[in-house]
Image (cartoon, one colour):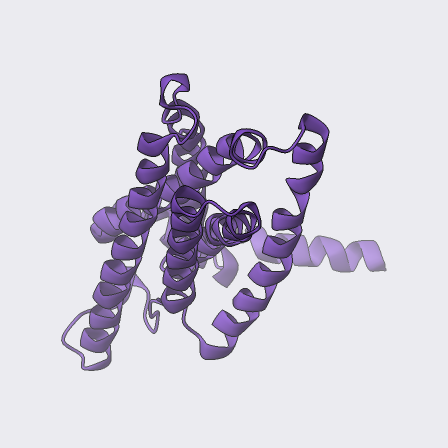
Length: 244
């Protein structure tokens, strides 16, 4: 009896008149046609690239700053590398919860990015080892937290499930190239301060904040136009609104 019920459900799903199939076909057929927001998706990919590049660069620089900048041994430097990441986990979860509560992504993303900038400046220009280590907590949290946050941000601005898969794949692929950037901006000839690499990471975080804020204001404007009936269905989906 159960097998007959499952067979009936299967036949219903693959039937030409099935609503599930019609929705799926409609979505697949419009992926190429309604790609009006290609520029927006490209900017989201750049946003993720910047976030990932900063994570890679800091991961490369952290052991150096602990050993050369603060004078710790190799073993102690390895041990002291972990606490900033543990702090980043709990802080990220807390800020993600706040973001869900206020139903906004961009204020949290920009806050985390600017927190990273403050941490990097502390590492770069303060000489007291304890204070520099505190700056490392801020920098690691600010950069790490924006990686999953940016992925969620990109998904929130994409209407169709099919397009979300494409956007996610594009973001992760482009973000992987951030490893190349992050590992090349810290050159041995710039030791021990690695000023060009540090300022490159700071500038990337400032660019991240600017991109996030600008895109979010654009998305809010698009939502307003759709609410007023001045713009057709966003991304071809009735009732969809961006979630900046």
